[in-house]
Amino acid sequence: MFLQRLEARSEISAQEREAVLSLNGQPQKVAAHRDFVRLGEELEDSCLIVDGLVARFSQLEDGSRQIVSLHVPGDMVDLYSLMLPKAPSPLQALTNVTIIKVPHRLLRELAFDHRGLASAFWRDCVVDGAIVAQWLVNVGRRNARGRIAHLICELAVRYAQIGALTHGRFPFPITQEQLGDALGLTSVHVNRSIKTLREDGLITVTRGTATILDWAGLVSVAEFNPAYLHLPISLGENGLAAVRQVR
Image 1 (cartoon, one colour):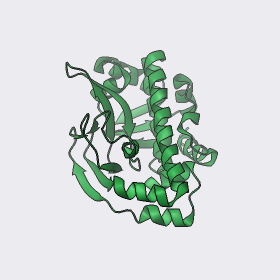
Image 2 (image 1 turned 45 degrees about the vertical axis):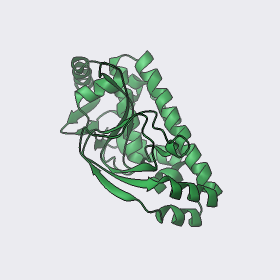
Image 3 (image 1 turned 120 degrees about the vertical axis):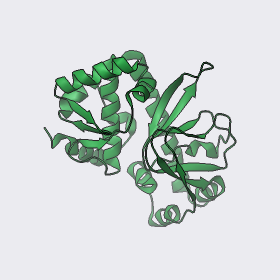
Image 4 (image 1 turned 45 degrees about the horizontal axis):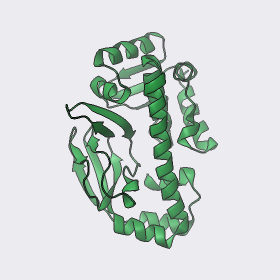
C-alpha cells in the first residue's frame, strides 16, 4: 500500500518499485489508545501503517489533546523523521493497529540509490503538510456540519485510493470524542451535527463504518475540493465514482 501511495503521485520505475518492495521492517502490534511515538522521542525508524487508524496530536499541559491529522493504511506516518528524527508530535493508535517499523538507514539508502524515490518521499511529506493546512482551515472557518462533512469527504477519497471504499462505504472507527478532538468540537456538538447530516440524507455512521448516501450534497456542505490531496485525476475520479454509485 505504501508503494501504491507513492505511485499515486510520482512516476516510479520498475527498478524503484522492486526496491521499495524489498524493504525490510519489523512488524509491531499496537493496542488501541496507546501512544507509540512520544513527543521529543529520537526516532531511528519510520512507521508504515498496515491496518487500523492512527492520529497525530498535540497536547496541552492540562492533558487536553488536539488531533491534527489522521493516518490510514499505506501511510508512512512519520516519513519526515528521516530529516527530523526528534518527534515534533506524538502518534496514537485510535484502534488496534499493525505497523511496520522501517529503519531510517534503509530508507536513506533507498533515497540515495534511487533519485526517483527521493523525490517521491519528498512529495509524500509535502502532501502531508497540505492536508494539515486544510485541516487548519476546516477548524478555523467552517461550521460544525461543514467540518464533519469535510473530514468524511477527505477520508472517503483517501480510502478509495487504497481500495477500501465500496459503494460509498468505508471504515470510520473513530469515536465522537475523538472526532471532537480532531474538529475542535464537543462530543454533544459532534453528535448533533452527525444527526443533521443523517436527517438530510447525506450519510449514515454505524458500527465503525461511514456510508455516503449523497456525495454531491456532502461535497456542497463541506465545500470540499480534493485538489490538496494531490491525487491524479484518474484515481480521484475513480474514488468519486465509487461514492456516486449509491445515489
